[in-house]
Image (cartoon, rainbow, N blue to C red; front, top):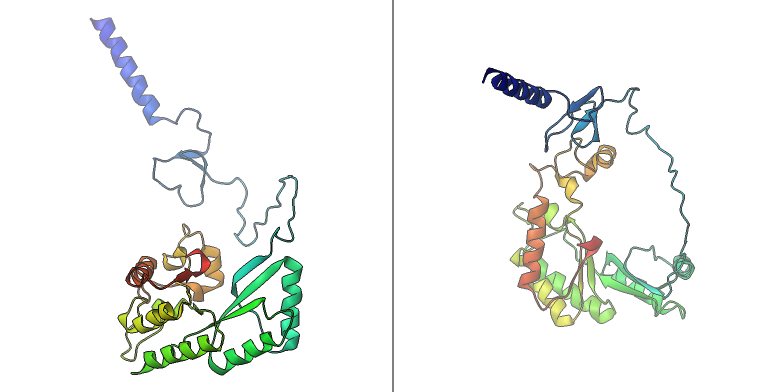
Length: 281
């Protein structure tokens, strides 16, 4: 019994020694981590659950500019097979020269039609429509959306907005937008509270769009990471460090999830209205 007990004890000791020691195949100067853990500061994961620090001084993220050594065949496609439609255009159209520049650019890339979604309305919209109609080569290639002025949300504002939309559609506008991301983020009502995307006060506008048969082009929120904590796990860290005004701190703005919930609720409440979401949603 004693030899067997001694052998058993030795095997147990060996097993515990293996468990306590380095993982099989683990390189020197590495640190093991458990699933779900992060590498210690200054180290990176070189193998699953194995972390190592660089042997050389690490560069700043701004100075690390690796050259790609990937060699593959190139297949440039400068123009589409069929004329494309740009539903989200913001061209400068303030005279015949700018219209001619737009025409040349559209021809160069194979763009058949562009929708101007620059929130123009009233007299400015009529001037733009007249400019386009005066061009024999562009009158059928450019369409214009009307817009909404959210600057003064005093009583009677929504009625004036609907009247403006009706007049602009009668003048030739083919839609409403682009409604900017400010709706839901920063636009305030007369009492100072945030104007939610699905606020019932806006219902007459969406109902007018359905009645007039024109789409509503709406931009909601920004990339989700703009709303997250700015730490080194944020994939937009460098962009937000360069452009801090793109951040939406949680104590100042609604969350990304809340904005999308308001948008989706708006869509559900107005099934007769055609909404088009900018930037893939």
